[in-house]
Length: 272
Length: 316
Picture 1 (cartoon, rainbow over the protein chains, first blue to last red):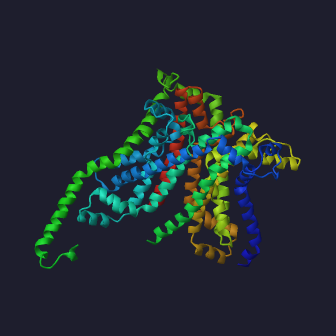
Picture 2: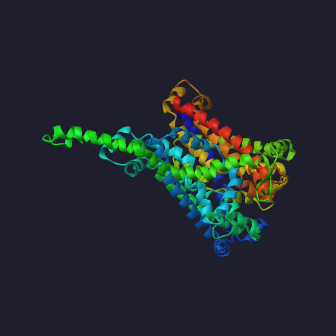
Picture 3: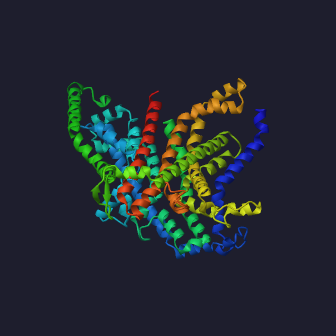
């Protein structure tokens, strides 16, 4: 105990040092987003010409808000679809009996090994043939379901006591009713996890939207930032940093608020 | 159910309800395949079209020469693979990927473990540090790339400014091969840390406290406790985190595209970037398909390893 007391200041020192390393890029990004680009170009990072001019410029001159909206639409649709189709699929593997069930499950499990990055060539040809290029649909349809989501929810649904299903059979509940009234509420924490996971996964997509979208109308935010960074705005550091901050702030807020609720949710699940 | 039944009707009703239940159960069972079709149909369709088919198609294409829209023209067997594995450019890409993956996994784990270990002890205000340490979870790849591009940018960037202050020789971070690799590794590790911290922190919290108390009574030093209590207890999580980080690193694309575009001199031309280049910039779809297959096999092997290990952990 004595040992830990004398070590306390040292521990705080290390913690603060680590916090600075983690926060450094955020702080530097935010700070330079407030500076005039001319000062940044001179390397005058201690400039006192602070303003939100870069933000105004980014919003006015670039499609950054449109990119955010596009990403929000795409990620929300993907998340909703995965919640529905993964939970239905998982339900089938837990509560339905049909021929070839195990084989099908292992096939789906096997697809978790295949990286999407290695399949972009045929997938690009497919969406081109389906006339989906440069539309929200091209970024949602291939991700309507996920093997990972089915697998995860299957694990969660298996925790449902068989007595509940037996009772439901006696009550005359059909599968739709049991799925909706019992299974989904019972596994809400896993559903919440899948929701967060699928939303973030879709939000962070980079390669696929880069290949399949060509206009600001549908371009999601990751690809949008790439666009800003590669265009003539390249050396306009103030505005680029402001755009990056505009993109990162909403996700940081969601993360911190979500973390709070998520922890409560986990505790709730543990005591039940 | 049974309690609700009135005594008067009990003798006649009870067998009847049981019978009904059986009939219903039987009906449901018969209907199962239609339910299965409705419940699984959408998922099977999507996975079939966008995961199964493209894998087979990629395998198929990898055995052909292709035209400029990606249609197979001449069957050449394994020639694409032979060409790749004997080409020094592809070997360099494999080597760059190996360096990148090892660097990313090692530093992500070491730093993630350090963060988790520092944050797990109870101290006033520790909650703040825990929140900060998980912050990069909220950073997407393009934001990370922009922040770090600025830090590494020549003369105005943070590193060059510090270097100037200390009169150190300036490093052209993103335009010299070695430093460019270091730069993309640092950026990736930073981006990974939030997630890794949260997972390892969770695992450290689950280590039973009495183990440490017992070790302390025995006179074990903190470092002895770390290596002989902490590490063995969290080794499953450590393994899980390392494979997830490793697979993620093999799939890296966005950060490379934004920070170095595979350069300088192909020094950061990782496997996925090479696929993108050969397919979508050079129009060499057959060769790019062979590269995709090699990538998929590597990732599948590591995923399989992870499954096997997790399975073991569940059973024992």
